[in-house]
Length: 93
Image (cartoon, rainbow, N blue to C red; front, side, top):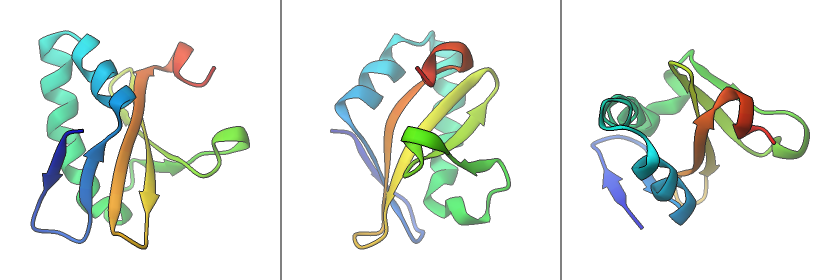
């Protein structure tokens, strides 16, 4: 499990699946997503975050180009869990 604790209100952690998907991306995409994920520590102030609907309604998504980053928020522990990521066509299946 990868963890990043920034000077902010939330700690960012990656699930095993989140790490696996990040490693599958090409380097340029992975760097871009890594840069954007840092902002999740203050995700409530971002206008690019959307609450998901349907079976994923407990999750949120952030768009980074053509890639969607799916994350969950543990309010009790002030933790944002990056649980999955992928291209729009396949991430919601």
